[in-house]
Image (spheres, rainbow, N blue to C red):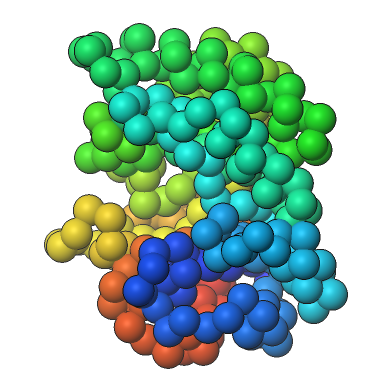
Length: 274
């Protein structure tokens, strides 16, 4: 059973990562609601910090919550890739917030290329360039592979094995990897890949895959709603030595339409089954 102290809310679960979604609770109310239900930590998105990263982090810790991470970097590859200055600004936000990790979503394939080799080489190079700034700020960069349906425009890595290959190519010794149920539930090599990644596993994101998903981005299931073998995925991360936060991250119009208090209560109720 997962200890409640490991439980963290990713605020995307309440719709706070996309304007116009969710109930619009202010950050302070979300913090208090999580603390009151015994959550151990919270993970924010950059857009909701509104230039108040340090104050938000202090508010969360004063309520008894860990700040477990920040989502996310701008893209590093593809036509929408950010500048080095914008990437460093994301690191600085994480440092001001007091977040130990900054999630990296890679971005798509490089313009004028086919396949993935050139894009992954570019990704490794940019990560190597950003790592010194992140290390100096006390922030760990954590790669998140995405489901293959996001290939091309959002990501160039799809599995833990892909992420590990980029980590090794980057030469960054503490570059981490996040395991998100939605993105890796289908991968039959997951346990072996996690074991190979070992100490690079730096995050476990819980949600579920709906059998008849209706939207590739905004129809995730709450744990227990779908067909992912969540306990097996957790066991793969723990078998690799991961004992850190267990972060609930549900992008779902259905759940965003519900009362946020009900959403948080449901997370707590379903945690034992994970």
